Amino acid sequence: MRILDSHYLDDGRLYNDGRPAKLIQIEAPADYDQLLANILDSGYYNEDYFQRNLHHQSGQLKYENLGLAEIVHLLNPDKLLELGCGRGDVLWLLSLAGREDLLGLDISRDAAQSAPPELQGKIMVGGLLESCRQLAGQGRRFDTITGFDIWEHLHPAQLNDHLAALRTVASEDALLFFIIPAFGEDRIFGELHPLEVEENRTAFNERRPFEYLMAESLEPVIPANGHLVWAHSQWWENQFKSHGWQRDEDLEKSLHRLFDPYLWRAQCSFFVLRQDSQAAKDRAARLRRYHLDLLYLWRTKLHFFRVLENRRADTGQAAIDPKRLTDGLDDAGVRLHDFHQAQSAALWGRVRELESEDQRLQDGIDYLRQLLFPLVWLRKLVARCTPQGLKRRLRKPGGQA
Image (cartoon, rainbow, N blue to C red):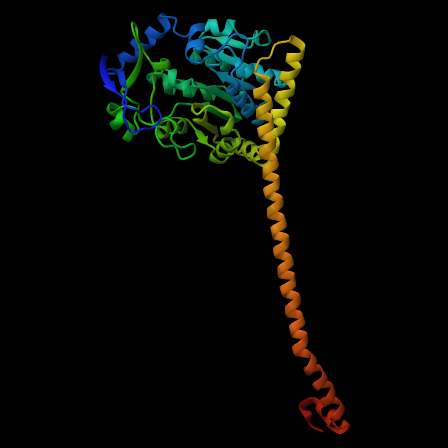
């Protein structure tokens, strides 16, 4: 591998203001081996990582993780598996909300040891591949599998093996909910991570993993945030598709519509995928029909608000700033109110249209009556003036006597 001096693009997109950048050029597959060894041997994923890169604070949950927990809750999981769960913020919120059958996997023992007491025994420490094989050997299957910024940390040469292992622990109706820092314009969530350096443009255009990684450390050499795979959104989608995972666009769009206002920009780069099976199709259809609307959003936020407030009352400590909880609940309530107002206005508009159509119909009937009125009297006059003999002749067939 080589270290290069470069710079961000200066097109004004996100961080692209032309600032200097150090790049790691991948020259051979073995370079990834060395980078991964540097990450693991240096203890990069220790507790400092979560404070430095993810801004974790002891005893405090990130408000944005509440949005992720709410999304998973709305997916109505029966058995939940979170890949790369860290200290288990999302799992802990879900356990407070009443979800019981859940499990987290993480490579960092420090992260697992800093998990809340409620998650003791519910986080497996170890590599993702080995953990999935162990769970599959135990016959464990999960209908909902999540991962928030995990796939880009894996060794590129092992990505297919990890995706194959994922299927061994997925139930027939499984849904996947993953956040991935995918580059380029995505047809659902747009461009959240634009191309940053010119050196990656060819790979970007050809939908290949990037060969130049941003450097976070040079002693030892470690890529930014520990990411080993940078690629276009379309490339990521194709990787999952090649292993039988279909992107459920309608379900994903519904979740974006409901939750994007409560997530960080980077968290909006999420994918919702399902098994290519009738059971998974039916489950996704039920969720879209019954669970993914503003009323359920408000009810879900109210549910989490109550359980977090109850815990604050019991422990005297707020895991999330109460004001932010209240603001989020209020916002969902306002959105629900505005939606109902708009629906009511649309219905009253339709009523007025029907009333107008009814009036036009009534006016038409009155006009026809006016036209028919003289004809009725003319018929009566003709009938009265016609001789009886002629009437009898007209009544006979053919008008003949």
